[in-house]
Length: 480
Image 1 (cartoon, one colour):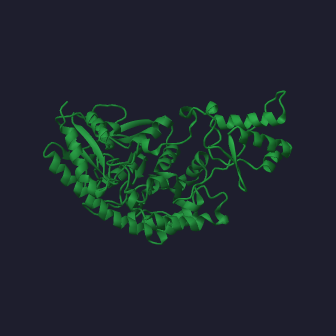
Image 2: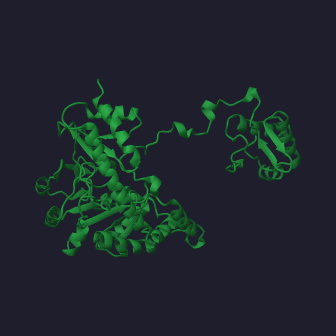
Image 3: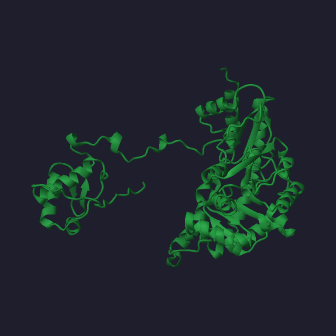
């Protein structure tokens, strides 16, 4: 049986009202009000009479008498040798309205936003939590790292990342150019603030990553969309006709269309940026999970080999290779931008949690991250194949998978039949989270006549995929 945790009550703002009543009665009323309004938890332990008398500057006899009165009237109970506790059953005439004052959360009623087919969520059950906890515990007990840290990130983690990114993605960098962030989202915000003024234009993929669209709206950045075409990818002809200040791109696995920019196309983008003195914000999303081909060298790495990486900001995170709640990301920026990015990060959040950074550095150095990635690459490949097989079985020729074999999601397309938003709502009623493609087109611009849906399979058990796809197909074919 798990041991119950008894909440200890901090008297906080407890104060005695001004009145003609005795000190004992005023203290009684103050404590009773805290209890009956649900501000002190049931079964919570009250301070000892000595401690309360010291804090309120009252005689101990006054506090003891007030406690005894509260016990007599049923608001608190005395346990021999242990102290005083708020009664679990209060006097009926002073029972609080639990609808208004209850602080309890019914977790069963909370919507699980990570359930089957939720996009962007890895397989949370597969992460080696016990190993990760060991690394955390080691560094959580180090007093030397409990103070303020380097805004840019610990040198240990930045050093490990330099080696990891060089070997896995051919990124050209050193520790001075790596900045640790609170997930990729903060990195995107810092990058946008560092390189763009309000009157300058940022190019965004369309459909594209909604969180980046939120950044541009927050910062009031002028944006222009570049179309991402099914099975073809980013429209480079469109891009090459512009002279925008920057472009945000997800070249390894475009989100949500699931296309990849190959080496030749990457070089075209690098040449465009070099010619126009424009910036590329490369979000290397899902680069670790490619099933149909070997991952292409990062754009930053390609540009670095040509001496053209001075206008590329490389961004990544550990949300998909580890877990979303870690909220740990990184960015690799040119030397010219390091100071400005650090200044912005300092203003936004200050330094990042030091013990988590040290634990992550050891987790990577010990080979645990690579072992986990290799394991998950095999599992996600099996899940992707199961998704494709189930879609073919239950949808027949009604829908088409237009995303590449990679990442943690598949994207469906269909021309006739149910509207994508209607299908999303029906799926939700069956406890399935899916996203309509319109979600990734937040401006509502109508550029297609077909319907689309994004299904995440990362956190969906392999054994549940066929049944869930069958359920989705039933929603698809359900009569109006």
